[in-house]
Image (cartoon, rainbow, N blue to C red):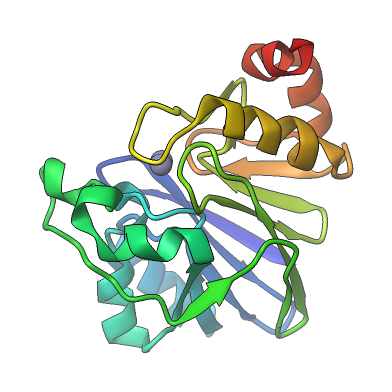
Length: 210
Ligand SMILES: [Zn+2]
Ligand SMILES: [Zn+2]
């Protein structure tokens, strides 16, 4: 597996291009950086099959339509995120200094679903709390956590569809039940492991104390 990270767009979102040994794979959260992502795909001669979104927020989806136009890629999102992708008031594009966005999902993902893209095995873990349809995506020893879990912090829960209790349940009952050695690649800032976050992340520790 090969994982390439691009930090892109007005939200400094981590967009990941994840591919198997033959170059077949996915783009996760293209929140900008259309040109650098396309250059990378062309240079490496990658065969990208889909855009997967960890959640519907505007800063994670800004380059979705551009990439769709160029590469004719389907967009995958969790069932509970598809309405947010369609509605600018839910993906927040209506209230930010970006074009208003309404994007139709092509494939709806379910909690626990396992998908194969080339040789990549993806597992979808529904982790609501930051948004209704937030997911983490497990691929081999990697966990893409979107805005659910960050290095040293967790996603905010004060935006539309957010819930602290749901986020705490998602993190303590689902994410932390996964293999502690998984490498966490969040939607913003640097990477970590589940083991380190369980021990040192003050927000996670507060969730575990309750
Ligand atoms: Zn978000
Ligand atoms: Zn974000």
